[in-house]
Image (cartoon, rainbow, N blue to C red; front, side, top):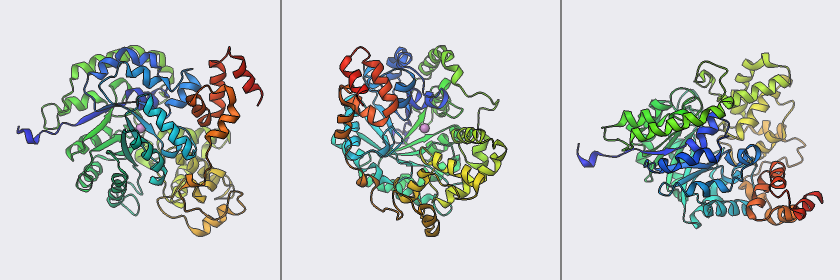
Length: 471
Ligand code: CO
């Protein structure tokens, strides 16, 4: 093989973030990562994703761990491999849009505690929602991974919105914004192998920065999709070590490394080393096994192949319907999700748009279409989450926003331009309970649960308790 033909595929390991987020509800403790962190560091991964997404929420809410400490602890063991995080743009690691001063402070702290690569996405692919965090990441000299959420208009790539041109255009926008790498984030496992081939072939022609694929195994296509993306020249792919792979997680690392051995895309990663680490994970996994969703024999979610509604969203819909004693209407809801999403300008189904569309579809089926309307849906129509991929019908807009207290005319500005700074006011409100900016930021993101966490953390501290009691 000529040297010029060798183009090793680089691998990002996601075991310590998306892996246990997908398989064990984000509950892996830092102490269980430490025993293999140093060996993982020796593997030659392009990066290891260790923070962001739901980890911040789960750590303080369920694990009694200070979320800010994990990257620093891991950095003692992971000294060579860059550490990455998933950042929801203006939503950071929370569930609403935060003011720019919060975004700047959060990114600065994340850089300080050791995050090197920031995978930034917006649920509507409205990149104005990435402007502030990208500016800060760059100012800190760190790596911006610009991300496009993968979604479909119909069964496959193509149709009126999510066609090749859409992704090429979005990728170009991110490159213009200064993205150092470009990621296609296929959170629901919708990207099929041949669509991936076409997509990455076109993206390779259109952008200069390295291309990264993040796909989930959910539909069962993930490993095939990675292989075709590799054939089309994708530079980096995301995998997890096998115990934390497959199901709704990522494709497994080991078979991909094995499959590419000896080819011009050989990853160069030592397979035996991976196998040793998987063995370690098998030993710690039993204590988390009660968190595994194993009600079904099948490890893939046929629903994604049938109606493209990802598993996480189906479980939300099911519990909502159970509460309303209407579980027998699930099939109707699936159809209504498709209609509601179309009405709302085809947002990708990812946090938070998946919840907004899902809940509204339930209301539409049970009470008639748009008879009862959630405030979140009104906010979406009002433009407070950003611009939807396709416009929403003006008649429907008027109907949904009729008498809405936050406004009746959709905004066209960047949503965060309407948000006044939050840090100072929060600092006054929380008082002595926040000892530092990290406490304060955590509290802005998760007021209730972080307050509980901080009270426990400063249990023996009278002024902290007085500050909380005084509110
Ligand atoms: Co993911």
